[in-house]
Length: 354
Ligand SMILES: *[C@@H]1O[C@H](CO)[C@@H](O)[C@H](O)[C@H]1NC(C)=O
Ligand SMILES: [Ca+2]
Image 1 (cartoon, protein in one colour):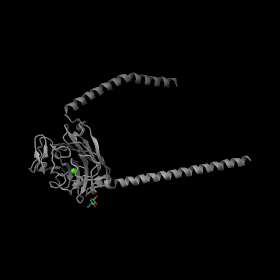
Image 2 (cartoon, protein in one colour; image 1 turned 45 degrees about the vertical axis):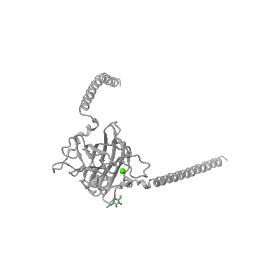
Image 3 (tube, protein in one colour; image 1 turned 135 degrees about the horizontal axis):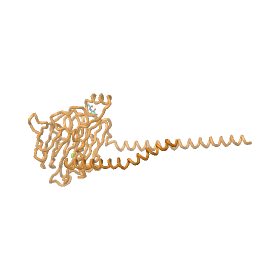
Image 4 (cartoon, protein in one colour; image 1 turned 90 degrees about the vertical axis):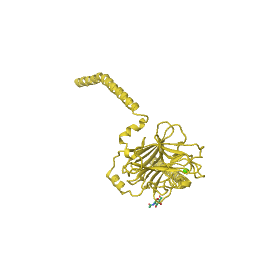
C-alpha cells in the first residue's frame, strides 16, 4: 500500500514538475501561431471573413474585377444584355435613368449541390427616398437571357429569385419598410406579382438600407441541404445579419446564375461589384442522395402564406387556450382523486383503530 502511494505521489510530483515546462512551450507555440495567423490575415486583403472558404471559390461562376470572363464571345463564362455597361470598377446593370434594364447571365449550368453566393453591389442615385427604383434581383433559374417585368427578367421563371426591392409598389404595404430583400421559388406557373412586390409568393425577408450608403453592401445566399439562407452585410460592420432562413427548398440541378435590374418612372444606378460563388462540402446519406436525384421542379415544402398568417395565429391561440383548459381539468381530476384516496386511507386507519 505504502509503495503504491509513494509511486502515485511520485507520478503526480513529476507531472506537476513537468507542467510549467510543457505549459510554457504550449504558450510559446500558441503565441507563434497567433502571430502567424495575424500576419497571414492582415496581408491577405480587406475581406478577411471571406478567406476561410477561399479555396472553394468557383471562378467559372464568379465575376470579379476586371470582369474578363464577361463578354459576347462564346468562350466567356458570362454574358450580358440590355443596358448593362462593364466599367473597370463595377458592372452597371442600369444607369440612373428611366426605363432601363440590364442583366448578366452565366452561360454554364450549375451542377453544384451546396453553394454560397456572395454579391457585392451598390445602389445609388439622385432620387430622394422612395423616389427611386426598382432594385435588383439575383437568380438561379432554368431560363436565362429573358426580358420582363420582374427586375428586368420574366415573371414566370423556374428556380430561385432573390430580390433587393427598393421601391414599394403596393401602396397598402404598411408593415414593410423598403428597401426590402425577399426570395421566391418559381415553378414556371406562379407569377411574381410586381404590383404587390411579390408579397403573395415570397418566402419572407428583411428590410436593409442599401441605397446611397457610404460603405460596401453585401448579400449572401446559401443553399445547403435544401436549406435557403439569406444574410446581409449592409451596415458597414463586416458581419452577416440574418435575413431569411427556409428549410425544404427543392431546386433541381443545371440552372443558371444571373443578375438583373430595371428602372421605370423612377431610377437608380444598380451596380454589381463582385459575385463570388463558393462550393460547400456537405456529407449526405444515401437517402438524401436519392432524394436530390428526384427533384425535377422547384418547390418549397412549407411556406407560411402571409395572407392567412393572422388566421394561423388565431388558430394557435385557440389551441393554446384549449390545452390550458385541458390541463386545468386534468389537474382538478388528479387533486380530487388524491383527496378521495387520502380520505379512504384515513377511514381505513380509523376502522383499524376502533
Ligand atoms: C406551382 O406552384 C403553385 C403554387 O405553389 C402550385 O399551385 C402549382 O400546382 C405548381 N405547379 C406545378 C406544375 O407543380
Ligand atoms: Ca417593388
